[in-house]
Length: 126
Image 1 (cartoon, helix red, strand yellow):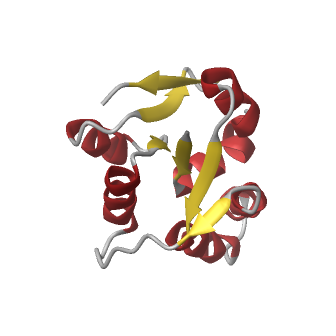
Image 2 (tube, one colour):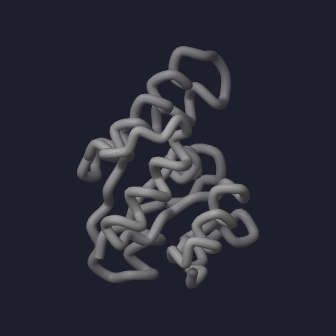
């Protein structure tokens, strides 16, 4: 099963102290983590800053490198729209803690994994 990690998901380990890959293993058993090149670009941009967000982005980059990094194949302006298009085309479940993206994915009937009570991940069927 392909599981697409968005920028927000890759920030969760540093921001909330959860082990993203262990949590996903608990939900799915075996899975294939995928990250869009555009998400890696967003993380690189965040690492240029200072403070907690930059530190979280550095951790996120390390997590992204443990996944298969792929181009979205989309020309959409926003990375969120590229995530939606890729997930729809490839049949991926998307991991995000971004409320707006989560709601858009669910409207498109795409399964989403999101944080619950800042401690664990929860699968929501689209």
